[in-house]
Amino acid sequence: MLRWEPDVVIVVLGGNDITSRCQPRDISLDILKLCRLVKARGVATVVVAGICQRWAFRDNALTSDRFTAIGSAINRYVRRYFPVSFMVHVREDVHWLSDGVHLSDEGMAEFMESLRLKLAKIFKPKDLVL
Image 1 (cartoon, rainbow, N blue to C red):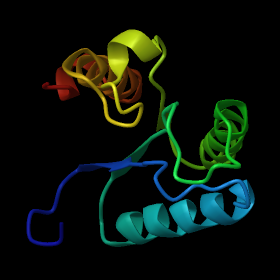
Image 2: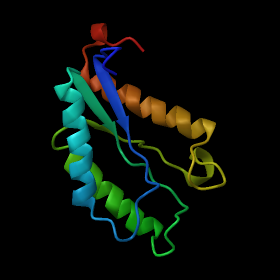
Image 3: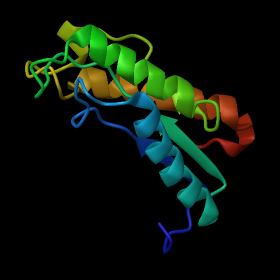
Image 4: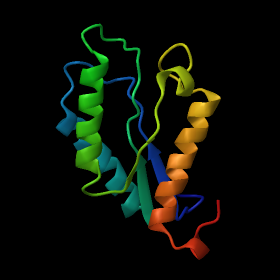
């Protein structure tokens, strides 16, 4: 990052390490620390790709509803300080592979479109080349 000196950095969050015992505020503070470090290195714009829904978990005590609540709390906290991009149209049967964790090609296209829409809101059209 320091070598390339980008104007924009997109921090993409995964949910692999979220468990039923996680505290959303602690995770949010770690994300904010990372984003502030990136800004301190001279990056003009930091966008966070919010935690996506998923349907398979390593922690047997973690349910889809609990995961969604944790991810939503993290996204809400982080977006107070940095723009957060969300996958708006999420369908388990279309946007994820059968493992319930990884995005399918259609899911990746939806993910990239959500980032494009967020960047379009941040930048003037003449500044945005995608």
